[in-house]
Length: 98
Image 1: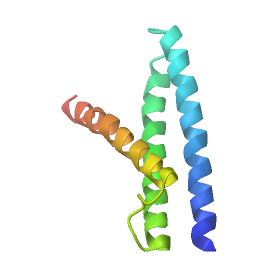
Image 2: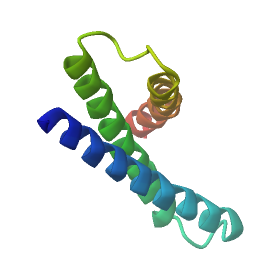
Image 3: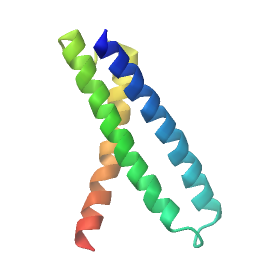
Image 4: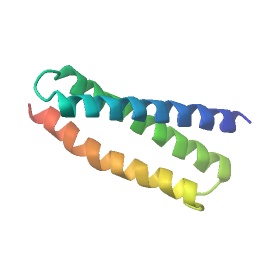
């Protein structure tokens, strides 16, 4: 029961943050040079969303007893986790260089 509740909370937080990040990205797309801090907050939002998806995958793994790739929902969540990881790694490397 607690895993199910935690799963729902992490899913809703992740979806809410992704919606906000998409809105911020669209705003920065139309106002390119004016709003720099919004772009940084969208990157931080993506990192928080990545953490929520990681927690969701770990929770499903503990609850089900196997790695969560058995159905389409779990596979798509894992795919979104992979795409987030692909996006976060260059961002973190860029932050260390500068």
